Length: 200
Length: 200
Image (cartoon, rainbow over all chains, first blue to last red; front, side, top):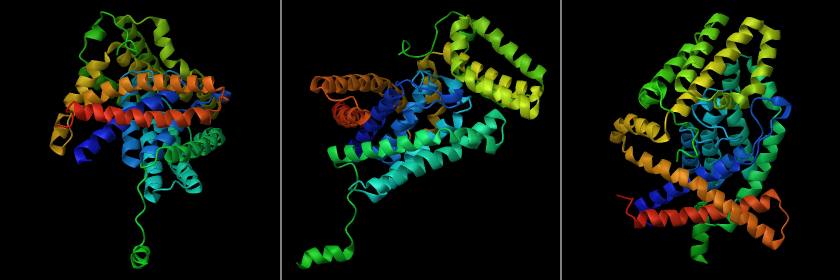
């Protein structure tokens, strides 16, 4: 496959998974205790996209998705869309989405094939929770004019749901990589191992 | 395209204003809201935004629907700020956010998706020197919007296959085949794009 062809394939994967993230947002959202960021499965789509497509393609898919939202398509969970969502309190999470997908995809592709469940879960938690919250929480604090501590306390309500999503995303990613092999790079065999197989 | 977007077609001064000018004014307004510090500033900002909605002849139901997802958050934030920092701070923070979100939504309500894409393409022209093709953005948006419809269709297929087999409707049994079908669709899309000579 030539470089141009693989670039076209990357583009096709990015736009298709922008659609996938949007479709997961169609699952109805619920806002426990009437808190800022409603619990949705859309962030599940972000995690799965990163883990399946890798850092660059995963982040590109999320950026295409956010671009469609900014253009006014109501694709964000709860049928939200347009420029208004980028002025609201959850703007930090929107900015964090492509970065989260990038971190998750980067970590999982770095280890390569086969997909390791424990490592995958760690990548999901690091990218989808630690990195995402590190951007989302200060942004909420800034937009709402509240202290970091208060914003953190508010977001702690979502931690259980996000941990559950990280587990589901890990199981899905593992099953997808088994059902559709060839996405994850094969790890380079260690030098002595190569020598071993050559001499025997 | 516009049937899916939040755009509402009317013949008004606000609609006729060039998309680039509206986006520029929105950025200026976002910067200006950071300077709001007294309740009467916020009252003035809200009054201006309301007048703009009147001028754009946007039905009030449509306008209210744009900020409805934020109602609970803004209510909780207003109560929190009123207790912690006093009612003036509550009015400034909550009113300021409301005004900016409503104004950003107004830009989306009065500007067709294609007009915003044109502005983005125009702004991205200097990126040509870095090897980015701005015209490609239009293709990206068209493919992204198409992908949403495609993945909705794929989701329906997966659901029907599940029902036909009498499989239990677990989320995992739904998402894994949906991701795999999305990957296969991206492969077909890539082949179609290469066949049509998109890789110039």
